[in-house]
Image (cartoon, chains in turn blue, yellow):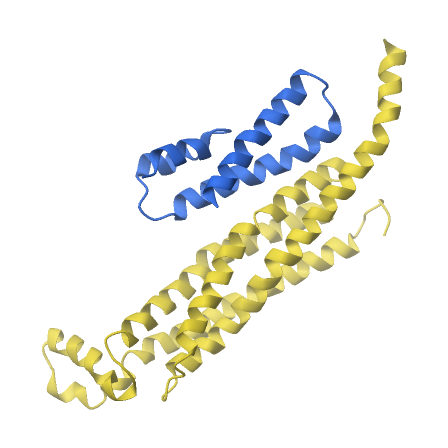
Length: 76
Length: 207
């Protein structure tokens, strides 16, 4: 669950930034935006509900874009 | 330059409409899939808990209660998608500051807080208390062992023992109606939000 959300979080941000830097299509931005927002919130919820995580790992989920990956790296 | 941007704006419109429809579809789908199970499971929870605490306790009710609580918890997390895609849809439609929508968002926030702060913690407390009161004891006959142990710690073992089996159920029994009330309030808030989303009083974007 956290693994998927973390991947979606990072990937969707990459898509958003690539879109912003290149073609800048409104459709891509307004579709990927909510997906990224959802993934970001899922990662935070998962990080705070998952047992056995350190306080630092939980708080690192708040970092935008790569929070999920940071949690995965910090979790045993 | 003016011509170029003008053309782009004219070409952009169909994509934006399609994206808006997609966002709305995801929003409605998420609402049905996530909030539906929560309302059903949360409504069933108090009744199942009552059966688990009944005088001859229903042996299956405890695991049912755990399952219902898990459904509520997991789908509450999935439900995060509903407001996120709802706000995206509203912003795409340009109705983000309409009165009916602001009212809906306030009611949704109230429902979410009710679920997170009142319904889910009470469900969890009841499930844990039930697990504690049933784990050391096998069935009804052994039910007196837990309160007797608690009574020995309190210092008055013998006189309490005769009335002991009712002791763990009583505080839990009082917590159930309160949980049922909060659950009903949560369901009512959701029903109001759903009706607001359909009726949209004062909206000019069509039925």
